[in-house]
Length: 286
Length: 286
Image 1 (cartoon, rainbow over the protein chains, first blue to last red):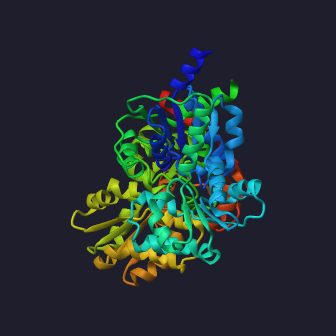
Image 2 (image 1 turned 90 degrees about the vertical axis):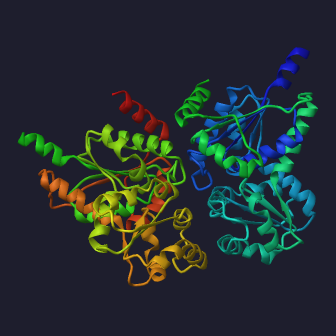
């Protein structure tokens, strides 16, 4: 039993996203859990998920989790808001490991901060259409007003690498934030892993009364708490390892990763989408 | 021999694109060739191609062509500018059918119209990085100046469905077109199948001296000429059939197709990306 717990504690934490955005979540996880080993999968060849049908997002997310399962992770973190919003029950049903999404932790923290005040959410088309954030807040406190806005251009704007004071960035943000500026939410959930890279510009437009909530912090706390409660935390003197897999080329992934992670990544490997599909099929048949 | 020619004439024309944009090319093809049957494949589950590495675009495009090959097409039209720009030699090497891309026909028509004047090109990140349009123009006339601009936000803007006079659309277009406005090109190639849906706004910003070139017309002429020369044209009293396949759900495809095609599509079937991958593998092994 003790040996088993030790093996499980030594297992890595799996993290996946439709692309590179999830590295903003990985970054926070590594700050909270420096001794842990991480496996990151970015499905960059099929990115984005947020403009696709729930059926397609579910299929891709199941393949992503099946691929990560090969590394026998102790926890799988669904860093992608879209996949968390539309696929979490299916992912949990098919995974031996604990699966943590980003929507519920964000909703819980938003309610803690907001009190009775309204909560705003910006996210991808699929995330907002799923109404996942509204449902998660309502499950905690049905009286809180939730205002949601789909902001499909923000992911390509971040990936294009424009500075936050670029006139195009401000023009697009002003357009999306207009209904939220009118409601003056106490908290605004940045409901997509790309959005923290626009936090300064969003903050300027929303004003100091609105607290911007990057779900990464809440997710890291949930994962830490889960591991601690089960005695699965890995405490080491040296930093844990990070292995990244990308379905687009490793070079492209490594080149863009710095912006999201804050430092270089050395260990990036390409994995073909057909290999993911294979992993998905094995998982369904198993 | 005569029977064989008849069989080939009765074969459909295959068209593929990373998503729905290629329907603007299909529309023009059907106007030119009303008696022909068409098979259209939109890889909407993995759209866009234009922000991905050439290696990934080549792999996806090979799978798309392998899937279309199952219908024994007499011609395959690569409606996607990105795939035409980075994958055409590989697609030709692997296809039994004639493969027509969109870059060379556009370059030829641009040179015909431009005379000695400079030619502008807007396209996706991958299309512009490949320099395919510049090379195609240089192969015809090395003295013509070509100015190219990557415009990655235009595809998501079109897919978001904003009207052409929307302030965000104008702000983004003004930003991309600034270097082109300075050079005053005689012809501006709309080097992505989504861009014709922004033609009015682009025309207003570029002014009446710049001719906007939608490659679809030139592509339809090349395909018609090819079929006529080989006696493969199908002339019938009634309109040919159209079958569409989409890797994202058929419902989503059908819902969005109208904007690009100008009318409803009835016959849309879902095809999984794993089936495409299978088709690709068969083609490579054959």
